[in-house]
Image (cartoon, rainbow, N blue to C red; front, side, top):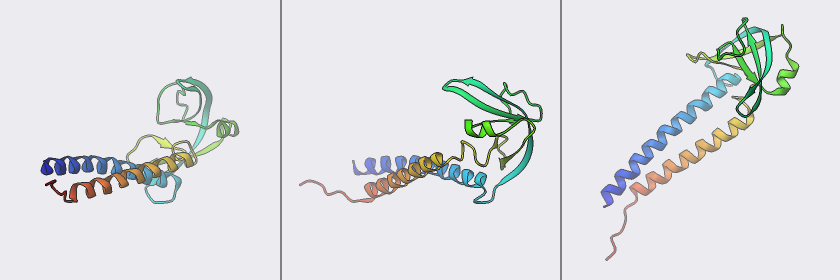
Amino acid sequence: MKTLRNIAAFILMFLVAWVALFTAGKLYKMASIRGWVPGAIYKEHVVTDKRVLEGTYGPVHWLAWNDADITERSPMRENVEKEQWDNIAIGATITMAYYRDDPEPYKPDGIFVSAGNFVFDLLLLTLELAAIIGLARYGLTPRRNPT
């Protein structure tokens, strides 16, 4: 029974570690887009269209460049917060970050790298690491047999 418990603990620990690696990678990507660590390339684009389109959860504020069709999914458009959208005019220059092989651009001060997303992912990573430590201790701690 102890062997089965240890195997189950290690399998679960491996799965949680895999998820933690994903979360850590996302945090690194976010930090790179913000310019805190290397990995992102920044390009300037001229806004050629801006619209508010109805989304699943309400209005979405879009910017597009290179004359892209703003109504179609494309790596030449980005949704931004309303306050940013209000302050960017057609013809304005915006900076977009491109992370490694990801074709999607990110605004260095956009929704993906917002403070709330950083806090959420840091808390998630903390919980994942705590789970890994707890599972390791659970799987490695010898249990006494009741006599």
